[in-house]
Image (cartoon, rainbow, N blue to C red):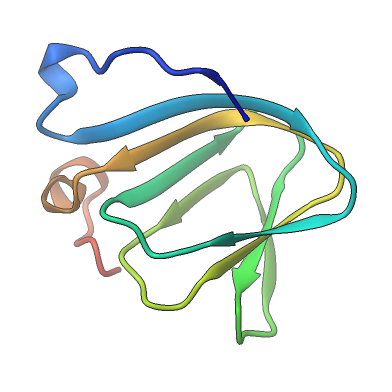
Length: 104
């Protein structure tokens, strides 16, 4: 649930599609991160993010998550309180901002 969603500053508009602050509590749930129009960056301000891919065995605990353009849903496991900031970057800006192309 978004708790903070300000307007995008003028200087970031060519690069940032959206940014949302969030703070929610849930029981043991799984969020399916489906393909989107942008590259997703999540900065956890609480517990690490438990993530993996729909048909993959590997799971990772991350304080920062970057998901490039993909065709397989990501799985985000939530086991309590989640707090952080979610950014959606324009795919053509990822090389400039992150040093990698959107597909990486």
